[in-house]
Amino acid sequence: MRGRLAVLGLAAMLAASATAAWAADPLSICLDEDRPPLSAHHRGKPDSGFDVLLAQAIADRIGRPLRIQWFESKLDEDSSPQLEANALLSDGRCSLVGGYALTTDSLVKPGLKTARLPDFAGATRDDRRRRVALGVLAPSRPYVYSPMTVVLGPKARDRKISDIGDLAGLRLAIESGSLGDAILMTFDKGRLIDNITHLVPARDDLLGALDRGDYDATLIDLARYDAHRAAHPDTAISASGYYYPIGANRGYVGLGNDPALIEAVNKALTDLAAEGKITEFGKQAGLTYLPPREPAILGDVWTKIIQR
Image: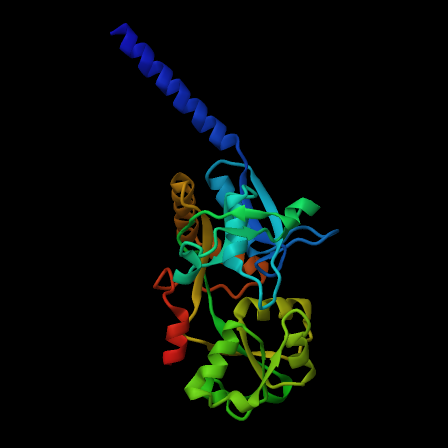
């Protein structure tokens, strides 16, 4: 009997020790360093953004100190947010990636076995060269809805937009290879094609060109409009108020081998949402906050777009 009690006591001590060690271990979350108003990290300025506020609240709720691993995601046709996030997680740079678009395509097992890491704070020359063996991703529950919206230039600010078809006759600009590009190019069997100008993401300033009046309208992620408005209070561009009906929720993503962490994060998100804290974080960050919508994970977005 005494032997059994001793074994049980030792097991309890080991469990308590493991729990204490887990709680003391920082919660490491990877965030994009240049994606205001979601997240921003610039030399000489305090870290800011909706995802920064939310990450701190999540860490506080689960009783762990927060460590943010900043990384840089390239805005070009060759970048892959899915592979970048997987590489960061699989290399142990963080336990979660925030602001991740929750779609079926973004959560499937990667077709490649390895991928390069994106640039991240503290990266060495070797880090930029090597490839990382990839794992399987697991999502949290969503915490914000991220739609595409039509933004109007100064010459078209009074145009009423209730559907993509209302863009007919306007000078449209879009970033090549983007989701907005696919939507506009395929709308109504290509009805808008003759009015579309393609810009190169890494070279051209889409919203700057729209602001100057070079074009009349574009279709972009709502958060990008929020960021431009915050950086340029006197901007001549305006929100149409129209949201494209196919949008994605955003949440956290981790590796499938740590279900306990995802469970803890989900509980924290549930509590914070019920208390109205997540909406409050959006207002503080200057984000047009929209709560998550069903389905939690968007299905085949490309098929949905082509069939519209």
